[in-house]
Length: 294
Image (cartoon, rainbow, N blue to C red; front, side, top):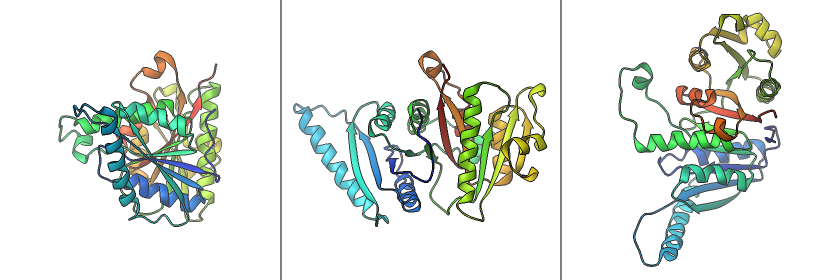
């Protein structure tokens, strides 16, 4: 069962991504730890080397020690006062999969991970470049984490600027499936808890209808979400495009989306809505998961 995200986040796992030099995940994790009064932050790093040596075990030990010193030096530049932390370093060639496995093994209440940020040119189709290996790995690790994590995952799109003030929650009122109803309830609960922590925060809600007969009018969405009409946004089209457009229009600082956990062949299928939205938007995105019914 997925863990609930509430005021009692006791353990944050910050993924130190080997494909980017940004320290945004660790900085964000420590800032959040202070906000929530979190007892612990785990700085997680997965490394690997193809060096051909006779003593492979010694190489692994040396590389882990080297990265441990580097990470300790990096953390020393951050504000960690009052926050307990540990460093976990794994050795695995498939680091995208290793992140998902570690998220289960370490059992955090929240995972914080850097995510691929698209350029304005690539979004508008003006500039088309070949996807780099680093970007591909970021996207792959995002997908695997979304599909396997038992806790909420915050995907960080850029450096910390200020605490988010405008939240956009994505709902799906097009289905009567129980798992999706639970998902809508979960994202709404988070959103209301979020705005309740500070008087200057506001929560907007968006619902997309891919078919005209599933369209929900803004007043009906406002009623379903328990919010004022001015904060309800609806649109006809793919969830990816509608949600991204509304997020940009209202200048949201944080997007909250949900996904239903999948297994087997369904879990391997690329093209999950949450993953496409994550690739499309530019703001930090929190993904909440509920298990698939049955």
